[in-house]
Length: 312
Image 1 (cartoon, rainbow, N blue to C red):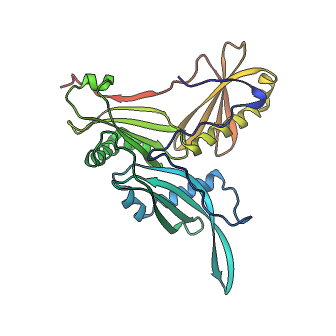
Image 2: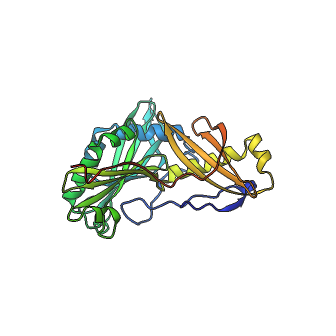
Image 3: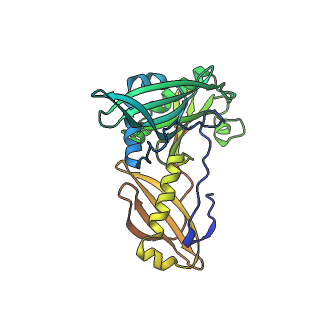
């Protein structure tokens, strides 16, 4: 169950915990910046930078069949010669980590948002990979291929930038494994970049097919920040502000995509209220677009598909 902490609504939820990305536990180094030269990127600029990076063919080739995770989008400054003058230009840089057989590689992709192109791409080996979690390199590549070729998965990620933080072996003690004894089962996690939305895709390598898909939440930093922002927007709505003023509240947030637009439903229950206030926030527009009531908290996960083992 999601943790719903009782807080005063004057001081809403604090920062979310960043669930570790995938590919290794190591300290992320920040992109070097010249003092005073960088500014905070907007959510729209971050999204555009990621899109530009993922449209680059070199990156496409690097990611094929790999686990990878975007850590953040920062800014980086470089000196350029323009009309005979040296000018310091600041660009977005997409920082990501890609798993490999020998090393985890940090890739920094410098993007020009005006020209809509990648200016530079820096690869830096970071560390040896963690234990492969019982999945061989060949199985990993095949599981990712099967997952991404599934029609339900393709419909869910169509037109969106996604990442594959991990590929795990499904253990013997799991319910899914008990239902399919003797089959080689692997789970592929697919996260939608910039959101808290992910898809856990269970694959039977024995049958070469997807056997279940669930939609749940993950801990991407950019997604967590958007939930935090939604809380701030919701608590400052005049109607909600009046309802929760000086009251102890429990709250949580649930993200969903509607026609490619990220909406965040902020659930707020003031102490002694029987129902829960739900403020739907459009993150891009930075405003509450709907206020409703709910009798229960959002589900932790939704089963999108499960194959019938008795179908044949």
